[in-house]
Image (cartoon, rainbow, N blue to C red; front, side, top):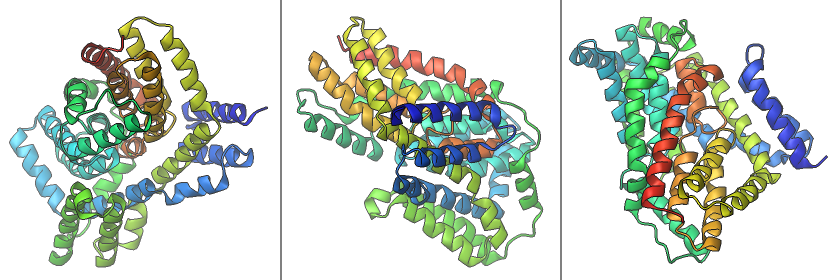
Length: 430
């Protein structure tokens, strides 16, 4: 049995475990067991498995949890939440709309869904407490906004992405088609609009009204704690604001986002804003380790050639089609499905060169397929394997895999129709 076959078997068993075994064993444990099995069978190098524990995104996640908990420990959250509830006059839809729009704005400056979500969800939790609304009604809307609207408007993040795509085109000597920053905005803007509308008006209807969970219990416990001293109070929200600025202007100041978040977490710890046990609890290690295990599974799928095999089969099918929209649907669906089970950046990095080479062989415009690949790989919200934002969102909203499927099916259908229909109309392949 080949390593690729072994890897696929373990992968399928992992998905089954996520779907039916999570009642008995946590999905974090299942993902780590799968990663260890991949190492033991030779599908994953031990060094690659260990690298996940030191991955910058894992450090970023844990650090942002601590920084967010530090802000949540102050009275600032309660004051902001009470003010928002007051001006919204008790309208949950207005409050949700405000936080969804805030998340979308941040996503244009911070090209990381997990960071955007981590910045917003502590404030959203505070409002949920004030309004006596279960966080499960709000967190998926914020999560899908952070994941799906990132890098849309023609700002700094879009410039960086345009440069990367241009580099791919140059590397494969297909420069007769040029990518501009407005191509990204033109292609993704309709998708961003429908995601905002879905997040505000549709998704809450499908969100579970779960029993009070871990997040709610911790939030109530924090609210009942003694207020911080004036000095620690200032340190708590000043650190959060400075970390946010550091994330926004990461490229300009030359400090990676994970370093900024880690420095903020260390300040929260050293200053005593959070106690030792509060720091450990706030790190949400189960979600961080879930990401580590997922990263290992995705790496194994890539290194064993599973993604290349799927890409080769896709190219054969597309070459046999002569319908612009059917081709666009395939360009979108394949990376979208794969991204639910492999890290989205990895899928994007694999399929953009593949689409460029495919279009070059047909003499077609690659901009449309590239943009469909970008949209598909950056709207992954069905499983915790795709992007670090999903496990964080699951923890904040107390969701399980069934909840994600229930809330995600309508957005998936709408995003697919809008993205494929629009992009293949303005950037046709045939």
